[in-house]
Length: 361
Ligand SMILES: Nc1ncnc2c1ncn2[C@@H]1O[C@H](COP(=O)(O)OP(=O)(O)O)[C@@H](O)[C@H]1O
Ligand SMILES: [Mg+2]
Image (cartoon, rainbow, N blue to C red):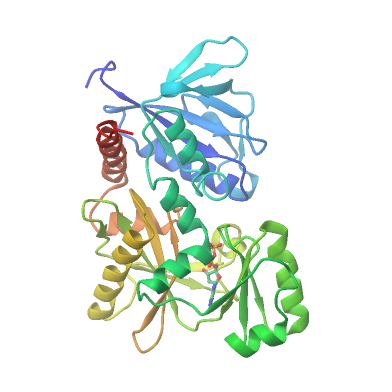
């Protein structure tokens, strides 16, 4: 493919979320995996304040070896996105790139919740991954659980709170038992998640969760293995042949266990499961993907009990792509390289865009 025919990918990363740094590292891996015979890659790094910067090489992220220390290089030109993907440099008013497809790898708030997907749609540019509705639903642990429950899929018993005083520890524990998990409804990477065992830890947990979200979910603690399945939005969607297991070495799979502590968690690929159980999980992952209106990709996370029964914990529409992330690893273990995965995700985004062009509004 000559340079004229190459697709220009706008790799969106960073963003206004607690997962800003994780996103930069995910973006670096995607940047390296995209086939340069097929794609030109413009990295669009979004500052925590929301300002966009454009860069054509891998120097957009500083100190990438340590996630906590990694940061966006703010010296790259500031750009403003305009219709049909033209990126206009703020200082010179010149068009620095024309994006053919956005690849948002902006985990969390404003990036995974339908916000940036809505912007891409407004700009008339195809984008990888779930559409607005799927992104918004999957991001919301309360709405997604209600939809999954409605379809008969197993979920964790839960209560939703819209103010810190909605429910006391006594009421929550009498309905759900102890310990309890308290979480912001629409966050990721375990930010704001706590385990509560008594009145004081419950109050602390509620306070912490409400610092991140106006809506908080209180769940029964589930005893079981944490198993993850990768789904790709083919028509029909397909689950990875291989599943993975997370073994948190501390209390639970916290942000620190995920990204900070060297020994925070172990990944077991493939997960140790009876083949019949694995098959049921793969089927449930595809059902959850469909029920929550996901497209492109998602990682579906489960708790698997000792008797082989399982519960769906959550669905992530922009799963991590760091070196330790399960989604790309599961596809690789299932015989699909990161480069091939990128081709398919971009292909699906383009196909959706072409189909929508035919629609009459
Ligand atoms: N109901 C639960 N029972 C047991 N462990 C839980 C429960 N909910 C969350 N956890 C633990 O907390 C981690 C983060 O919770 P999760 O719902 O996955 O939030 P996030 O979207 O931030 O990843 C899980 O990976 C698991 O280790
Ligand atoms: Mg999770």
